[in-house]
Length: 409
Image (tube, rainbow, N blue to C red):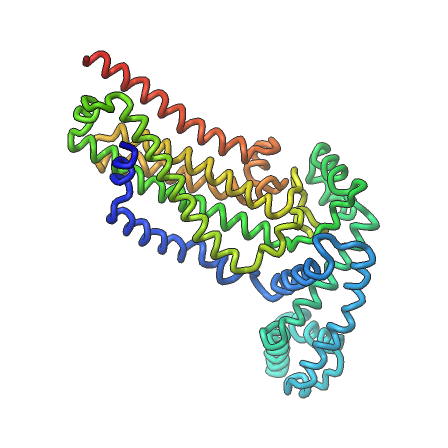
């Protein structure tokens, strides 16, 4: 009987709809993170440097390794100079060192105020051409790599000297005493957890991407599961099902089929869309912990990035199963497709409001749900509550239908 119920769910028509809507959702909300991560030359440089450090030094950067990385800055500047020496624009202005290029860029772009003369406009355009050249593929984004190496070797030294207090007073006052104490104990103890290597845009972008993906997963589960109970009711299948050998257990079988289908669809979505993000080579950081001196922000837990991703997947399954159960309940109590849609629209809106805050910056101090509630781990609690709500609604429905059957019998 379970197999027959599964066949009723997985119909070619609804699969075609899912493919179409999935493609539209991808192009609207997810494609940006596939095309433009890391976003911009500076973040690309940070990502390149972080990958290089992990491959050379491992998942943490020790003081002697940081000194080695800082000592490579002159070599990077010499590499940039080789590119500049072959560039006609740099030759035009007689730039003979990377420092001279930086001064030229600062005068021509950063320090410009008010209306520009024709000469200033020409210098501005030339400075931007040089910047784009040094940030492009031809030069392997040498400007971004110099920026990242300078920034994070300096930041490393600040963390080492000042510890949790390296930020200014106004910045640290944003944290509660409990948050401050946790950060000091967890990241600046004997194990020096702050030395982890983790590009800051990676957890931010990946969790945001997964938050939007969770919206699609929940919506796709609603689209897949909702029509079947309504179709059975419109065709007066329920009396036949109740009078069959399966009897009152048919609802349990239908619910099991719905949950299995929701889990299967969730798995397919994660494999497809998660696999797309994996093309950025994020597996390099699976062994790195999620808090880092590279300004990731503080987190309540500090697992490896790989474990953190698995926790995100777990919360995705919990939420998707809860939404699937709620969608099954709503469609079970809908007399026709219009009534079903009217009930699904608020559920979809609620899902769109909850999913991104649930996963974005998961378990970090900056997570929106944590900021709202000040409860550590509120993301996991929320996912469990959604699942519990779906299971409770099913239990109440099953109990009610059992009583109806007995009364009718």
